[in-house]
Image 1: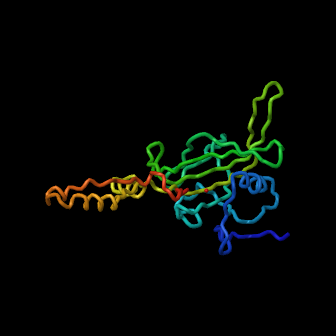
Image 2: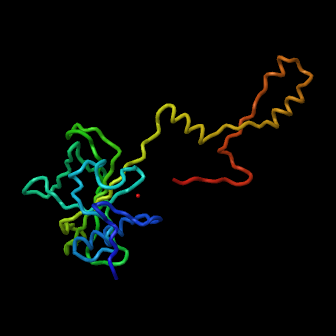
Image 3: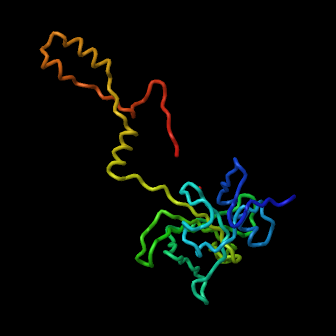
Length: 235
């Protein structure tokens, strides 16, 4: 079968109507594992660059925050005699956050596992950089060895490549104006005009001053609808 190549000049270009949306398991075992062991890839869709040679906004491809970008990147050590990777760029650095996620294969049990590390980009010099909305998911391949004495697992990294997924978080809209607008959109206040009309008719014999003081009944949109409710759900 002919290998499909969708990478040109370091940028992935899919045909119209196609979108690359792999799962963590597919990234690790269908792409990274094949890259590390020099097996044929399902499709040449992931460019090969050194991610830390670029600031995130200068990486090849579309930098729209809704567009995820994928890259194979070599492991560049920060120190000559160490295994710690160099995560410094021209304008900032990538900083690890949270705990690593283990990724196992659902189809094989060959003692190989994936590790996903989450990093956030800080602009400026460490350790006083300014946190940005850029996020990097770094996938690594590890070998799993279980000790014979106990169930402790030793994880040993495999290969000289990592797979990176770069994206930008959606900026929070928590400014005063935005918050008020969102609250009004989520909980619109509706009025029962039939109740107002009935009260208006019943108070027609009252004076003008008293008839102008209506007590409106507010109906919350959170209350159950007689015709049913609908919900909206938001790589």
